[in-house]
Amino acid sequence: MYNFLDQLIINVEKAGLEGLVYNAFTFASGCTALSFNIWYGKKLNISFIKRILISAIQISLIIVIMKTVLWIQSGFTYFGINEVAVVFVFLPLIALVSSKILKLPFNKTADIAAFTPLCIHIVARMGCIFTGCCYGYPCSWGIYNIRWQERHFPVQLLESALTLIIVLVLLLILRKHKYNSKGFLLPTVIITYGTVRFCTEFLHYGGKVWNELSMMSFHSLLMIIVGSLLLFVMIKRNKLRSDHYVSQES
Image 1: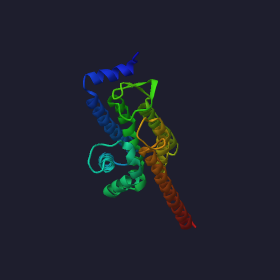
Image 2 (image 1 turned 60 degrees about the vertical axis):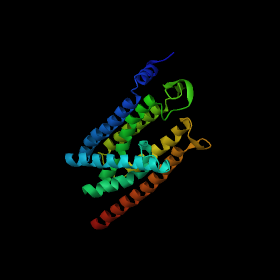
Image 3 (image 1 turned 135 degrees about the horizontal axis):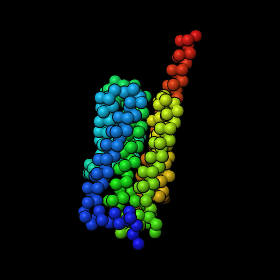
Image 4 (image 1 turned 135 degrees about the vertical axis):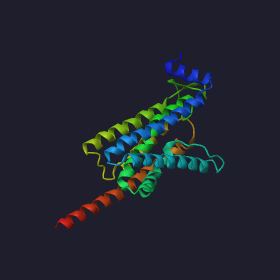
């Protein structure tokens, strides 16, 4: 017996619109990131024009990185779009590039960079259920998968929901601190998302390269390492600034 979501996926497949629907979610994810950045950048006292430019630069870099990583993974034979999760380890570089181009403090461009892929992931991941990609293990209470013609655990929707929770929790914390992250937001996002993604990878079906670990599992571990190193750097940076202000006052 098909539920409403199953029937919707089947109807989209019968109409031959699964690719179009997936692309629509992808486009909507970029619009979501842009809208969020315009709103959040105002909290950081960034001018409207620079909010637009930051979004354009960072989204463009994200697309280039996704394509490049997939090109390398395919043995330099395919230059398509990879999933946005591969971008997280490159976020410090993306923040640094946009900071240099727009002559903005790294802390501000890093805060924008932290949320951009999260917003993209929340929306784009939902489009995966219509093409049957990034699916979970077969289970009777899952959602219909057009590739396997059976129900699979809706890990795509779970990851979308968990990413949304990460964004909401971080916003609540930032609100208490008047949106002043002092540079800690970006490493926190990289570590948190890396940890969550490492756990959800065990719910994905297939694509395992060593025991129950996939390439994304190892990529998630790399996220945690990169985020931890960046966090260490930001702690040292803030400590040096604090020591400098104390010495100036004395």
